[in-house]
Image (tube, rainbow, N blue to C red; front, top):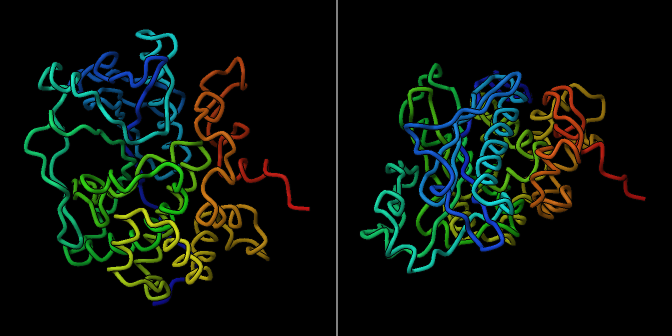
Length: 354
């Protein structure tokens, strides 16, 4: 069976982390958010998100949906709730796309144990790798934020070997593309401990892919694209598309773990034909007469080669990009209906080259 670009619909969810800073630097999430067991829920018309602290970073659990637009709505609920509660603590609080922070030694020494501990349970790894083991969390000067994706594929009943093959396929495609996309934001230091190539868990709903940072929080359109990309890759994996992508596993591991942008873009160039096909599937380009001319496809590829700033000029402006300040930006209606909220709208806003 060959992959024709179409895909079976699946539920996509996420539980991203984000740091908050104010005029004094990092604002620890435990200063303004409740613990996970008392998470505060923020609602919108079609979705909701549960917001809580996970050490120094904020985390929120989002509504999974087979309509990705509603999952993105839920991400906005989480960002909105995080910023709203942070501003009650510090009026100058802002969300930031910076995903690695150095924590002052004094803070690590004096804070409560529950705030300093590294909260994540161990991950599985498709290559059998482990991040550096931290015996004493007070001695680890850095904290990190991830952008994990959850796929509702339990019904596929993949055996462990098949699931690991799928994770490796996600690495060689989405993972490598993300290295190019997040070139200005991701640091190799993070992947010494967390978010290594091949990192995943197997919750009841199917798969949690844990390699990505939170770079895709830069804009709802980018979040939309990353989730559509992931869904299309699942279809490609199911129907033989994995055979069309050329990548050596060791090369993929080195690209991701070292955040090697040059090698990532070289690999994307080698696979550009397949990359175009995947983005065509992800953005419904296969329904078009000339999908290669679709800006949705062209800009998706461009991000991998030139970084997310090539399409999103203000990636740190969460209030503008996610319409968190509606007096300034206009109302967030619903991801399906509002302007500048989807990947399609974002691409249509980019001036055409002369």
